[in-house]
Amino acid sequence: MYAPRVFISMTMVLLVFAVSAYFISGSVSTAFIHTLICAVILQAGYFIGVLYLVRREKQERDTGQPAEAMVAKKDNRRDGLRADTAPNVPAGDT
Image 1 (cartoon, rainbow, N blue to C red):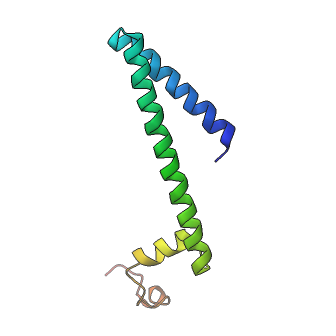
Image 2 (cartoon, rainbow, N blue to C red):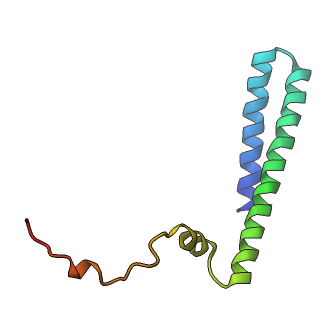
Image 3 (tube, rainbow, N blue to C red):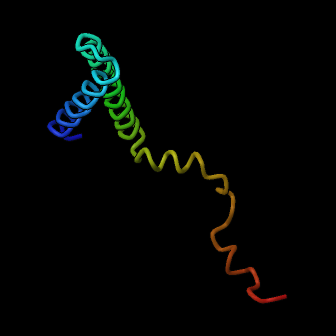
């Protein structure tokens, strides 16, 4: 994640949220409090996202394979099939 882009995006989201909260409530103090709550929720989500990325990277380094490969291997239910099965099937109209 590119930090300046994240900060600018979060600032823009909070600005739009503050303006919309002001128009909905009509009170500057209520809009300010709601915007602060929104900022805390955004920061918590960002922190959880970073923790997830770090955890996934650690698992990838521990196993020596990419995390996507681990998920693909877990979801693959046809591991017992031979790879040369398709050429043995007759390809004709019967």
